[in-house]
Length: 82
Image 1 (spheres, rainbow, N blue to C red):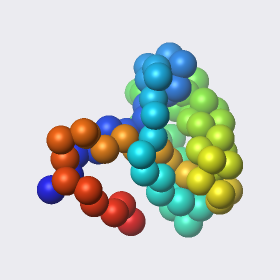
Image 2: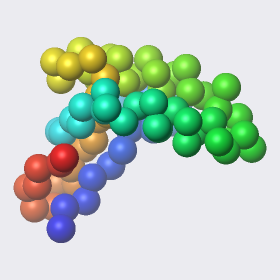
Image 3: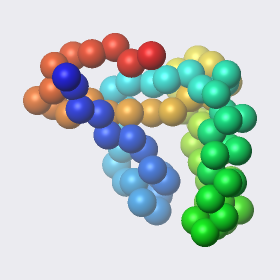
Image 4: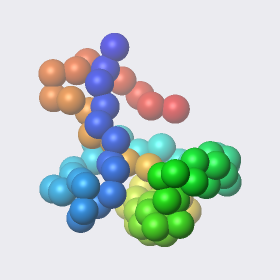
């Protein structure tokens, strides 16, 4: 089983992130947003705009509208993400 690192918040919590894999999230983004905003104690209004920017940027890199980026651990076996 491969290990992947998820990009958290580029520039503030994640730096020098070099994705090896992308996942198109256009069909799940609305559910992801709702899940984040269901946890008001995490202040989603403060962080979700940053995630939205990242999703659009990684989408441009991947050739789709919205994507999340992951980096495969160097010693993990190669694996395709959904």
